Length: 218
Ligand SMILES: NC(=O)C1=CN([C@@H]2O[C@H](COP(=O)(O)OP(=O)(O)OC[C@H]3O[C@@H](n4cnc5c(N)ncnc54)[C@H](O)[C@@H]3O)[C@@H](O)[C@H]2O)C=CC1
Ligand SMILES: Nc1nc(O)c(N)c(N[C@@H]2O[C@H](COP(=O)(O)O)[C@@H](O)[C@H]2O)n1
Image (cartoon, rainbow, N blue to C red):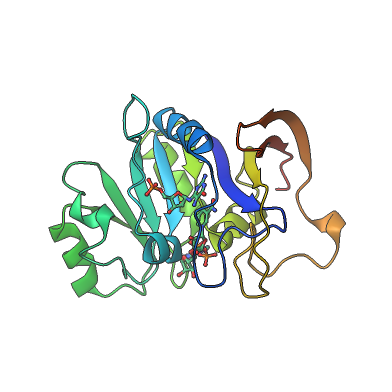
């Protein structure tokens, strides 16, 4: 199974402002992302991204098939009125929760038309989730679309094959603004995953799209 992380950041590495504005990519870049989604079996996001952005995670800017939408949501907090749950009967949607989710929330999410996968005791066990996506669902291409905490988990577990980062010609600043990779971080740069720059694209809006292959660290 191939796992790709895609995100857009400012020159200073922020994927959203401290107040939660994440409108970073140009229309051209968003079309590229929608094409990437169309070529993926599933798109995976963290619950904080759902709560901040209320995303659709569809391919509406291009022709193609919507990927299955997967939300990493330990406690089953996804709101009933979120775009993902409101459209769960039209576009297949999976909520990956842990044992922290109440039976009431699991039932509420299932009633809305989404599937629930339980993986992990506290946080969602990302390794177990990705294994289920591969072995039980038969998915071959997974697109991870953040946010920073989810990016950390996927990279730190050595699960990513590719990292695509759009650098927009903007600065967000703010020590509380979310960065591309959050989590605990490494003590030494040498402990982190190593990347190979495979390709660079420039968009009409002056963005650089960097395509990195990820060296496995596990
Ligand atoms: N510019 C861009 O390309 C993107 C920007 N964003 C922005 O990122 C921000 C959200 O990012 P974050 O706060 O970092 O949250 P996130 O979206 O990565 O979600 C993290 C949350 O997911 C849950 N979770 C459960 N198990 C987990 C596990 N094993 N590993 C990681 N998370 C787990 C936890 O509740 C955790 O706090 C939003 O402001 C959003 O707008 C999000 C995606 C793309
Ligand atoms: N590639 C990219 N560029 C940006 O500027 C972004 N803000 C994001 N965000 C990701 O896309 C989701 C929104 O998707 P929809 O437009 O609602 O389909 C958002 O939740 C992030 O995962 N990505």
